[in-house]
Image 1: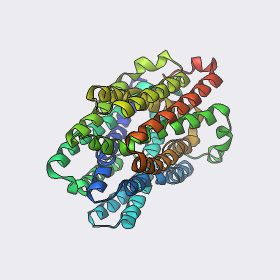
Image 2: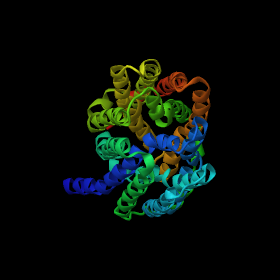
Image 3: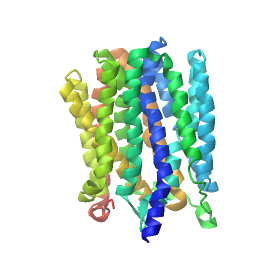
Length: 400
């Protein structure tokens, strides 16, 4: 058994590399993409539309890829093909494109990349389980490499763009996706056997369960609250006079606490049921958005708000993955992960990006964070409902 456990851990190393390279790509792309668009001369509404393309692809691409991976068992091969084609698309960003052309390139690129992490997490699900139960420690040690990748590029890109300008943004995109492509080609070519029973496994009966419905509702509103950070945070800080280096540092603070959480979460998570953690994380989101809305010009307050990312993202993400593993086992994994991406990131990303653009254009960027605080309250109410449905049974549903 010790040898089997060691072999299992070795198999996780390539997945850690995929996580590191993918989030290194996200670490520079998401914070600085709006600033690149701003330098190209786009207004707030156009920026919000173009930044929403990524979320728009999450409405259809993850479930399509998830369905295909569930029915073929070829999750790794699909990851390889998707990453390679996304790299080709990224090369087109060097061309001077009009808004529609740029939008089409982004649509193709994000269609290929938006399902990478759901498929990767579905592929390694059996490696982060122990006796059939979700292993928070093992999962956290893999996922923290993604946070480290994000941290490195958010720092490096901030300093680079501050000194050399935003014109190198396409090159950063190509290089980071090249790293992703190399990483996925290093994954072991695992294929899951498809049995007749599992091949016909249906998602709908799971979705009709009360705790699952309320879980997706809280996930929707929780991530909708996060959109103010994902899309508008860099623009907001820029409007308040923060330099690109400071913008990078403030993003980095959130990633540092995220890494600490992922590394130590096995110590904290057993202290509450998973569903209770949903309530705690959404409540922290209410506080974070309120602080960001009211006192973003006060550095130490903003640092506290960013430190809450340990709960609002890291803890919440692990809880969601654990609950998905519980509700969508076996051949439902790919579709369960995909539904989470669609419902929790696709719809909120499109709605938050477009509505946030209109709000900020009319009432200023600060208004986005007041609205985010309201949606965080809705997430908290829905999370409380999940907890009440599964309590007291939820007391024994611990993260192992």
